[in-house]
Structure formats: structure tokens, C-alpha cells
Length: 511
Image (tube, rainbow, N blue to C red; front, top):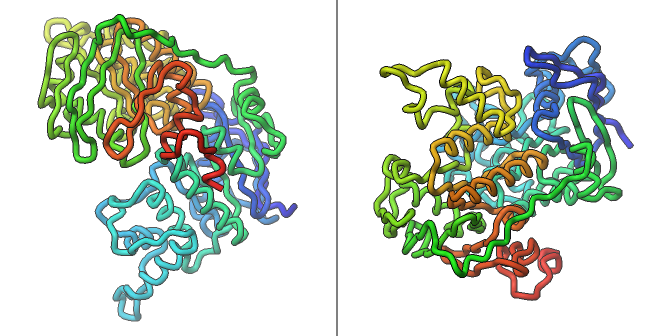
């Protein structure tokens, strides 16, 4: 095997502790290599060292194609052909495909500085076609599907002027926002890159995808590499054991019987741009799942209920009180809490402390004579940090310094302390590791047992089965099936998501 990248003795110490502790990573030419571990295991720090953003502690060594790789120089990776596609993709909505690609390479210009649009458009088409995408270069990237947006971000790495040709592509959680059908398309792109001799470092929390797409997987735990092995010798269970250092005790839904109960929440004729009139009930103690691929209408449900998007029609009845035409303010007053998909942009205040993020929606209980009591606020925040097992546990830590899983715990605590009647979550465990995900499932089930109507909107069939007591499948804006009991299995949910006939084998259709 031809060595491409060798990193060894990587350590990185911050004020809050050691993020990496003598970690190493080895990649070979043309392989697809997975990198996985719990939030806080050191994955992000390793990637930032590789990108030149962080300078590691003394003693670290790195080589690329046998030559020393300088640390702490953000331009060095680009010079040798290392490119990064981060989870937020770095695309600029409002600009076209060709303009977004030019942001990475610069525009092709003539002798007088004028842009050579024909050359730029030709280079854009060549890069996107090489990955199997047929895109109009003039299309606004905001109009593209999730997998097409990922494709544009990867294509940007293929357009190079004076820099070295792409040799290593680092993908950080590229499938986090992709439905199952579009994940397969991304895997096809990775195979095309392999044929060009490009190595891919694939960072993900989705274990089944790592086992499907990767040749080898490296596991980090507590800042150290604990294993690197070929996926042909791995199982999901063995991978989880390496990640956690123990077997996983799976979360078990309560499998409630709702026949004799009155619903605590009733939604009637909820209608949006894609969502056709939808009716559903949520029963006491139940976690209800709404599952559908992008474009099914599933992604509209939460924003319509909380009034972030104005519904065309529909009403929500919460504990006997009926509301229509909700907006975010009235929804909150009605006891409806919402955790959106994009927590970094839409929920977390990154430069505020954990204490401030957690207490923000309800200040009355910590206000004395018109002023917020810092002592009371710290006490309340500390109690919830302990209850939710947020790490690190310092309430004065900035939210931006927390892992995605711990940010999500803070957001859940933020709303649970308001004692909501209904809690809606959109893709709640996106980008969260397997251990934290199980903790999060248990927290949601406990909230349901406390009488909160919990609704989870997701594209992840396995998550729906592991978390929910009942699942409604959406396709083309309508509910196509309700699943519960013995019919609620991952195979059945994924079959419904793909629109397959009742007894069709998924693998046979995708082959």
C-alpha cells in the first residue's frame, strides 16, 4: 500500500483540558477512510491540526507523500492537494454554482482583469460532471437538493489553478443533512474520486454508512487512537464497542397502548407549500415520529406548527385549547417548544455562556426587583447541567466550545425548564455520536413520561425505530402509513422511505 498521510504523536492541550493525547492517523493513496468517535474524542481537533488552524503540542510529526507537512500553516494543505468540506459546506446562498466554485479557485480572468465567463463556466461543468452531477452553472445554490449542495462543495476542491491537484479530500459529516436516497449518490461520488486516485477521509457518526462506504475506519476515544481496521472485519457492534469502550445498552421505546387514552395534542388539516392537509394526534407518554425524505413535507411540519412558516390552513389543540395561525410568540405562550435542525444558526447563541443559553427563554424565576440574579441563574443552570450530563460542566463555558451533542443537551434543557406541553424536534441527533444519542433518547422518553407531547421529525429510519413509540411516514405531502408495534422495524421504515412495494428487498432495488 502507498502511504499518503502519516500523523503521529498528536497532542493538543487547551485551558479546559487535553483534546488529543498522542493520537496518530495513517492514510493510503486512493482509500476511503472513516474517522469516528464520541463528541469530544478529538476528531475536530485532529482535523483542525491537519488544516493548519491549530498548532499541536511539541513532539507531533506529520508527512504527506513522504515530505514533512508543516503544522500551523493554513495554506500548506492547499499547496499539497488537501481540501476540506465542512458540515456547513461553506456555500453562499444567493450566488450561482459557478460563482460558488470561483470563491475557492478565483475567477478565470483576461489580460485586463475581465472575467472569462466561458472558461469559468466550462471549468464548473467539467468539475461537476466529473462527480456525476448535471447542474446548470447559473443555478442559485439555494435551489439545489442537499446532495447537489454537497456535490458543489466537493467540486470546488477539483478546480485548482496554481495549487496542487486534489489528493486528499476531508469530508466532515457530509451526510448529516442527507436523506437515505441522496447518501447513496454521495457514495457514488466517492467512488469516482477513488478512480482518480483521490483519498477521502470521511468523518461521520453514522456507523452503517462508515461500514458501507469505507475501506478502513479509525476510532478515537479520549484523544487517543484506539483502533484502525478494515471494514470487512467489522460489525456495527464491534465498532460501537471501540467507540464507547463498552457494549451499548440500547434505548427501548415504551410501546404504549394509546387506544383507551385521550390525545394531549391534536393537529388537524395542517397545510403548507408541500404538505397537504395532515391530521395526527399525540398521546400522553408517547414519542411520535414523523419520517420522510426531503421534499416529502416532513421538513415543513415543525415550522408550520410553531409559526416559523405561515400555514395555509390548520389548527393545533394543546391540552384542550385550540390555536390557529400561530406565530413563534403565541406558540411559545401555548406551551409549544421547538428544537430546529440547524442548532448552530437557529438556536445556539455561540458567544454566550452555557448559563445564558440555558436560562434565556424564562427569566421570571431568576429575576429579583427587575434584575437577573446571577446567583439564582447560576444555580438553575448548574442544576440542569447536572441533570442533562452536559460536558464540560462549567456554566461559564461559551456554548461555541461545546460539542454538537452537548449543545443539543443545553437546548433541550432550555425548553424543558419552561415545562412545555408539546416539544417538537427536527433532526434532533444530527451530528451527534452514538453514546450521546442514546442519552438523548432517554431524556426525550423521560420528558414524554412527564406528560410532554414529544414529536420527532427525522429522515433517519433507524432513529425513528429506536426512539419512537409510533411513526407516521410522509411522502409527496401526505401520510402514507402509520407504524407501531411489530410493524415498526428499520426495514419497514426504510422500505416506506424509498417507496418500495411491501415485500421488495431494498438491496435488490438499489443494486
